[in-house]
Image (cartoon, rainbow, N blue to C red; front, side, top):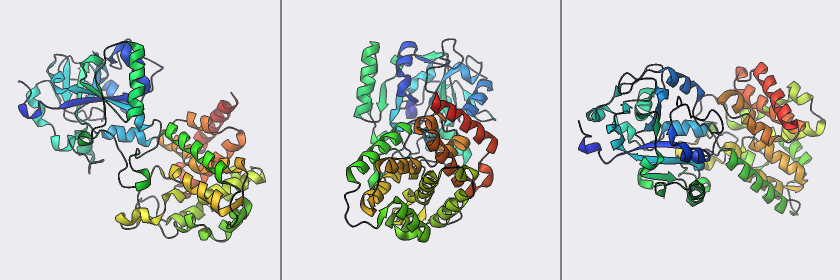
Length: 446
């Protein structure tokens, strides 16, 4: 049967990281089992557990074989898989590019499509007849919501088109990019490769591909999660702003950071930024306490850890100060007025704290050394890094890139352990953490 007229206008999509584009221009899109599929040198944004299931899943129609014998594409323009990928903070969403193909690809003899994602233990239904497109859940596929209420619908939203073995770049009708900067970067790569390439277009608000913050005025237009390059850029900016503004105020609340730490020990609400956390409740079931109570538990937990007591006194003070300030990015309370005053889960709260730390150091502290400021900014900005490497598959290379010395590594591990264990004790696996620490220390000294 031909493609139903009601679906003939549609596109199907394949997204990848822009760093992979040079190889794609040389080989086209290759399935995982293709003999020329790169074993290394590509930036994979796939989940290892999912790939293991796809490698085994049988395709019962068309050319047959396994799912890894096919190049995968999605029917939906906004993929829950992309959201899952960027939440790990291993890539920056603005560096993801979308290839848009005509839906007529499914008329090829080597094409198969599904009614759900091919990444679960139970396989989806597989089809080759374009007339079976009517069996897909198009309401869910076309949804512009960021999530689905139940897992079944989420997987139906990720229905796939599978092209056997390989797919030419030139069959794409267009390539969608985040902004003009990425467009120019893609154009430079294509020019160097000297091959035909589809038109490059900017994100279309009518057919939204990316997950963009549209509620927070300060973050409007940014990705809902900042990746490693974005975090590093914002950290560098905060360091520069601090350098430009410290030691210039004549009427500060605190003479120096030592007095600031004493002030927080005496009264957590002594800063406007920490006062905003007092009584702030979270809708996250894991955070059963208000943010201020949780923060004080982190400080208490930190003080009892051997990772803390083994630090030199000046580093103990620095990591304890960062513990007091690590969650200020969850405020102010006005952010959550539309949510009944409940703080939503915010994977970007660490990087959101940076301008607040700058303000504290430049307006509320009279004398600050720049190195002290940069260390405090780093600890707050990356306080969740070690925990997310251990528990959420964040890339451990980021720890090596961030920690410039053993003392910084020690402080990051102490703070990460205090934060994780203050919530759920078993989140911190001592054996895994020790092995991670040894690898990172070796990486720093390499």
